Length: 310
Image (cartoon, rainbow, N blue to C red):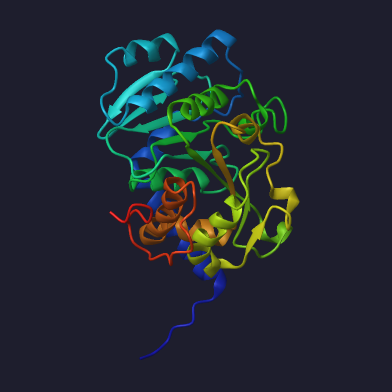
């Protein structure tokens, strides 16, 4: 058998072509793209933040059983559009406000997992990856920002990880209120030429997680991500630790929080490979479902609950 050696630039080009097709084939990511707003971001009033927070709390708390009949009316009161799409409920603004895009899974969820992509375009492919993970069945909720990090008003102005009064933060806290012992996983991306050849950097930001949390996360994620390079801790790459992240700060004492920085190689592969996303989803759901850890059990790449051995 002849082995074809593909030059690296050509291989990357082929991956980008496949990635473009894969992202366009994801209807959930298409919906996010439709409501994207890059004109800037304004924090809602305190009253509206309360409405958004209480709406998300009620929605995620009831999602396994039955969505309350007044949910559409409450969404309208919060100036959000509610849309039923298969086994999920979508929330977003139909105006030019960049308030975020939120999806909640209706029915059984494998684990109390919330996926977040606060920089879905600036951290290349992270929004599409988070949406694809949710499409494949991972998570109770998906929270994606709908603006670029930088707006016409200036660099970093629209960064929801720095705005504690944003609609995105209200949705984050509401989701934590409604999901007991939730695990929030924020997906970010970094440039290898700036931060080194790591596959990912794991951190809990400033959320003050219990001892052993990051070690357990590394043990679960290593079989999935180590093929792209070594995994790094927050102490090895402090610039990527997310210590100023307001979602992590807001979730301290409320929920678990994992700040996951991925290399470009890892992101490009996750975007185009459903099996690889399945492995990542299983690792994250296992971490979410097992707050006490999994006691050193060897981890197979299969969709089952290692905690209950269902």
